[in-house]
Length: 190
Ligand code: CUA
Image (cartoon, rainbow, N blue to C red):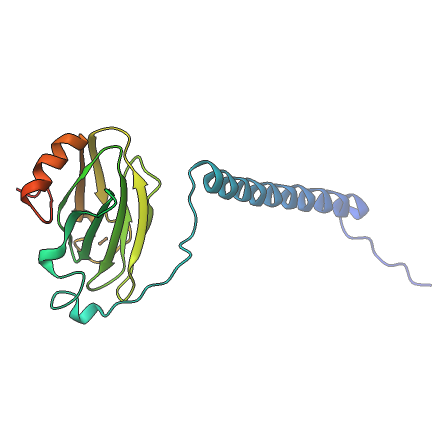
């Protein structure tokens, strides 16, 4: 019979290793649970949902023909009183750079990119998505109060990314209606 030499520390060493592994496993499971809870919370509380519809468009002819020609960008009043805002993102700006909308009115944003993937986020709303060339992204929201919201691009899109900002200006509905009498499309670009 040969004696198997015991490793230094013996079974105590195995116990310690098993205990540490278990602790790390619990930590990782805990982090995963927190992340899942965050997804459920933002989904239910902020109504953040992944886009569920796909609409395509040719990014090469955006400026020439169709819905996203320059004269059709900005805010338009629909027959039912709601507002549709059409805008384009490109390196490194949005067109229009200032979006004018009325408060307490359903707003539909329709946006796309003319070149690369850009981010689309309006502060203090649940709008937070990407604008991809070839696809039209649609978002609906209602602004309860007049005020100014920032609209930064939050997807890295090139060297000018950090300078890619626009604004959303929410004004009283009456003031918007007065302006809308004289204009087919509205924006607050000076
Ligand atoms: Cu556009 Cu970042």
